[in-house]
Amino acid sequence: MENHKITSKYNRAKRKMERLKSFYSHLSIFAIINLTIIAFKVYDSLDSWDSFIYELLTFNTLSTLIVWGSILCIHTFVVFVLPRILGYDWEERKIERFMQEELNSKN
Image (cartoon, rainbow, N blue to C red; front, side):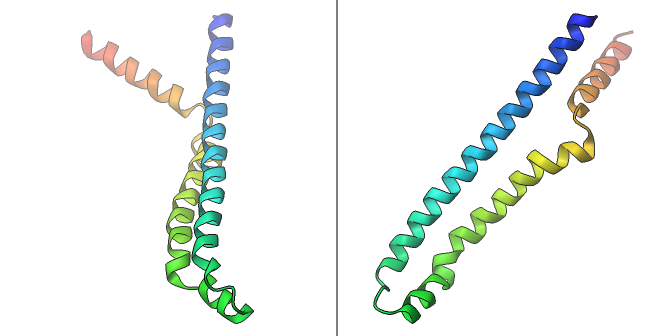
């Protein structure tokens, strides 16, 4: 039984680490690609500071940042906030519940 608890804790920690790794990869890709997109779109407007700011704040330039940023916010919520609300072991509780329902339905 003790070995099962250790394995269970290890699996939970591993899943948490995979989620964090996925989030940080998503964040890095978001930053690199959006900075590149903004740089290419704003590069033509380097004549003056006003034209640079105007081009930087247009919807055409910010649309990718806004949409992808919203998706990144949802990913952040799922990785950092949702486990605290549901509890870190909610997956295991659900699996145990489904297994009990399955065992009870067979009897």
